[in-house]
Image (cartoon, rainbow, N blue to C red; front, top):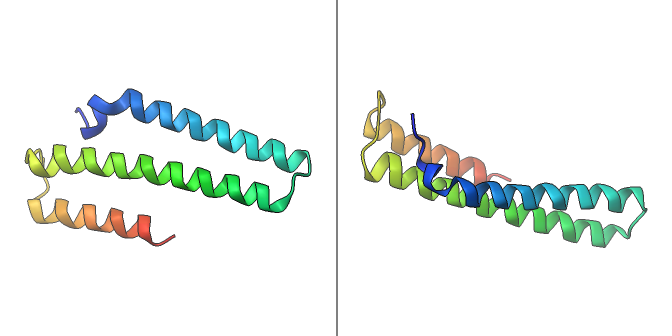
Length: 93
C-alpha cells in the first residue's frame, strides 16, 4: 500500500532529520548547563518544526485519501472523522 506522503517522503525525512539534530543539540545544551531560556527557545523551534511535518503529512493524507477517494475499507465519513481526530490531537498540546 502506498501512503499519501510517498511522493513527499524525502522532504519529510529531511525535516525529521533536522529535528533530530535539534533535539540532540538541546540535549547537549542541558549537558553543558546552558541558560534555561535558550533551551526553551530551542524546544519551541523543535515543536514548530514538528508541527510543520505534521501539517505536511495531514495535507498529503487529505489529498491522497480524501480527495482521490483512496478510502479502502473505511467509509468517507469514517475517514473524515479520522482526519478531524488527528487535527484535534495536534491542537490539544
